[in-house]
Length: 431
Image: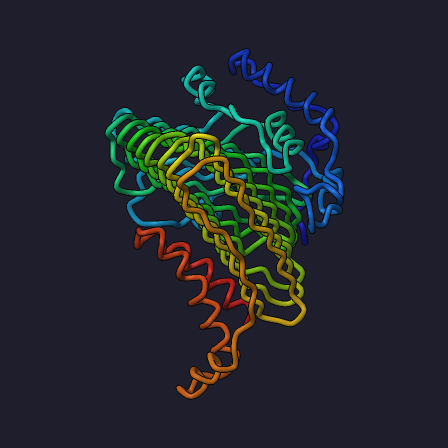
């Protein structure tokens, strides 16, 4: 049975900012609420919502939620990579556990605390770019109700060998999580963050609107890995904004196996020469799950490189939507940009919609984009059957191998193993 909790309705009024938080944040929340009210809800004929199931945007019954109970069971289940540099566990945006082996100078705090101890540093990077891929209304709702998240600031030259891991647990029926993750990697630093979204039971319907700001300063390396494994009654919107400066490298990865409906929007802004951005995603929707993916590779400076690879394996009557744009500014010469979306259709009743795009306003560029949708060939099945593997297992092995190509690009064995754990759990549920 779903766990029923009673909290204020999400759409009725804004959340009051803590008296301990700076005035700029209280003002930002009030302005965000007005922006939410003033921004029209998406419509079926909006290009940024093309092919989407607009009825999924009915959030009227959801509540703002907190947590005050015993979280020991979920803390125990928050097992990620060994020897993590830091671990933070949240239930309904309430911090329930924190541990750290971070070196001196690295700031890793719940956002609620960072707003008190480092208000000006947070202000410098907090949501400084408008959301432009369709979810501006929901980004404003997120900001208006925001109470917590993670602030991670890595000083210049500091290299974190082990990942920082963040766990979010959705608890209760019709409850809402609105976490905000803000990561700043200063010049020459290196950091990897793994963020996981899960549910405390299989039947409670929750809503998550998660927003992040990722900043890789010159020569920094920032890897951001998200595992979305919420239960299949839930809805989730994730909005990812990355800034990549001169000679910096940013990798963002999203594994989607959970939620009834998931919308992901990811923007990478390449702001310096020789900046590199890698945008990666794997999804395995089943049943009637719908995954809506929108991306924007924005080449602002000359001589930058971006590479996007999204792979979807669709089962049942699942649907995916991919809409991506490579946008090259005037003067962003010598741009090197790639965009690929591949869909593996595991049934005759699934549906994959892909809309890759290019807009080039500079000379001497190398850009390509494309999308493919295909079923498993009889030859592939025959090859495995000839080696004693039954047909259902053969199909699953092919789908797993199809996904692994993306995961192996993470370049970190422990992180890859962690992601594969969730991927294999999803495939095991199909047997």
